[in-house]
Amino acid sequence: MFNDRSSAAALLATRRSGKPRDMIAPGPDQAQLRAILEAAMRVPDHGKLAPWRFVIIEADRRTAFADLLKDAYRTEKPDAGRLELEAMDQFARQAPVMVAVLSTPTQNSKIPLWEQELSAGAVCMNLLVATHAAGFVGGWLTGWPSYNAQVIESLGGSPNDKIAGFLFLGTPSRDLEERPRPTYEAVVSTWKG
Image 1 (cartoon, rainbow, N blue to C red):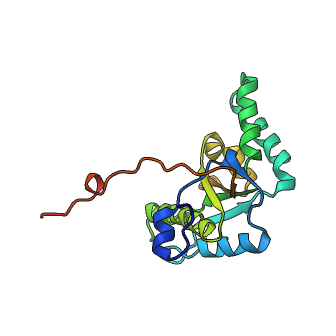
Image 2: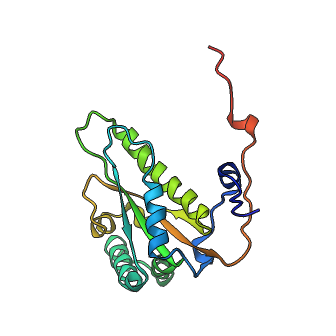
Image 3: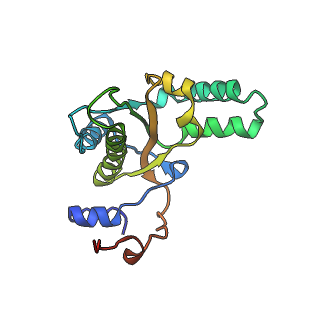
């Protein structure tokens, strides 16, 4: 069952990602999105650095964001074909709500970079769980836009920052499919020293 919210354990056991291209309205409204992002921030964060930032790309800015992606793509790949540029356009326009999550580690900190990056991953996962708890579906994508310096800079990132992902939120347009998951035995072992 999708989004079993009868308990925290049930919600975690039934959470699954939705494909952003299959998401429809409604998505979280402004108050719901704020609550989702505030819940997302409640992650392990050694040193209390908050090494992540959220950038909401609102619906009325999606065309401008699509144009930015296409321009950045053409700059990097001058021979880009029509289908590649259409993919950039589609990426920017899917799902009712789009949030870019930046990994913004504090340089020269006593907190290892890896721990700060893990915190950014945890904030993405909390965002997905909070989205499901609010009754919506979320999808976490990276893809080419996540690795382009021009895109990172456009989102307010510095040269040391990375895009942890683009989180898309909305309502599923069809039943979500369960994907194959590893068995417990395949991924859990007991240390024998």
